[in-house]
Image (cartoon, rainbow, N blue to C red; front, side, top):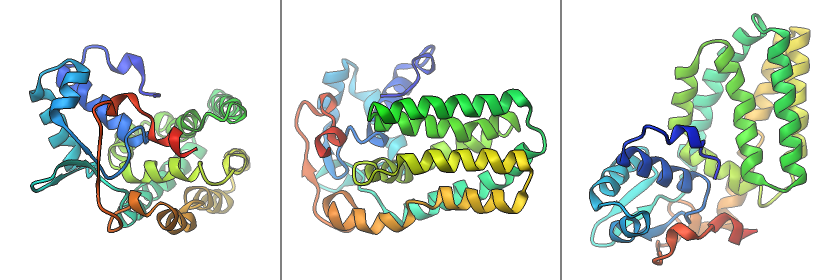
Length: 248
């Protein structure tokens, strides 16, 4: 899990439980559609039920948890309509931001982007898909950091749970990581050229590269997507399993 350790410092128990569960959901450690138990989670995390319950309420507001009458609490299935909206939100905010970045970056900012690409190449060679997505996010986060638009980035992160799961799931299907690297390098080239038109086209291509694959994924894994198969019951060792790894 690539949830930063320093972000756990000075957290309340509730915030820690929330962060832990949210990252496990987004990184597909938990299977979409799986029924989870407040009692089991509190026992495995060695906390009372209250912070777990509060965390699940917050996650439900984000669309990552679904309360099912007389069934319990379910890890929300991936909703393709929500994936599309979350992608749209990111595209709108990032288009404005990357244009600002192009007009105010420094050589050190470009070096930082290039360093992130090198780290991402290493993660690809190690077939570490979660880490590859982590570096993908770090690459794009740089645009928001440099332009002092961190609130916009946090908004994207807080509203992208379904989109992120779809991104990660797609990596189990096709070897698209090399194309991601090439697209990152193209973005840098367009920025250095200060070619606005090419930059926007390259950004749109990059952010929408998985859009055509979403339906294919839902057809191959119908039980993971909304309005498909019924939910499945989780087991007591939910927190110690890795659903995405089982897929691969």
